[in-house]
Image (cartoon, rainbow, N blue to C red; front, side):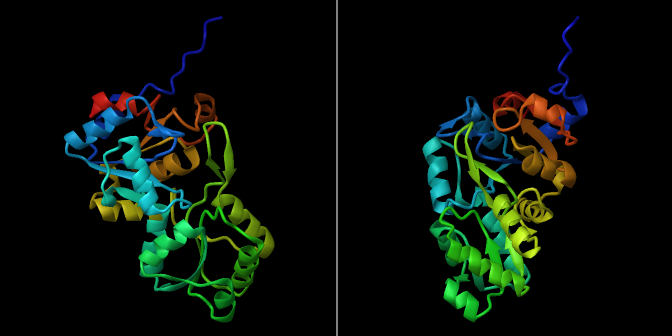
Length: 281
């Protein structure tokens, strides 16, 4: 019996032309541009091509356990060309949402010291547990807290049952540590609080409309001229497909051809890695 031909990586000419016409390229990080502590082969050449072709380049991560300055330092160490304005995190989306909806400056943040520093630098006042329980914050913000304690869980629960506005930076259930190991992420915390008090947050990172809005406002472009490249179906590709961005899946990270074949999400382009995109630009 002849082997069934894999058609998952056979783009049509229209999709190739859409990608080639993109005026902004937004890249996920882990699994898309690097794995563990090293760049994916060909990633640096791809990024150089984006810049030399005079397209806008942005990096987008949902991971809020690392401060903005540490992210910039990591990208520099990897050799990636990056300026401060090119890094987008789900904390940026939360900042924009909170300020636009007057949920500012007093918040109760479920986040580690890195995330607290980020919010304080943006002008927020992050209440302690005692302060939050005695003086209602404008919002509860649930981030990727790698220093989570029962005291924080209890405080968050008490605020949520009072009806305080509730925001989460992103919905990822697991965060990759290595290519094969993971740790619980914000999506797992969301499930905990939904079980405890029946509330779900407004999520502002990938794949939500808030994240799309942030990208469009930052780039000053419509979604049709923005390409999003990522390795995770339920965040990166879902956002790109549902918003009308040019959706590009790389198989260098979480998603395999088998996972893609079983998914209802169908990106416009599927490549082994970003190295395969260099010649299209």
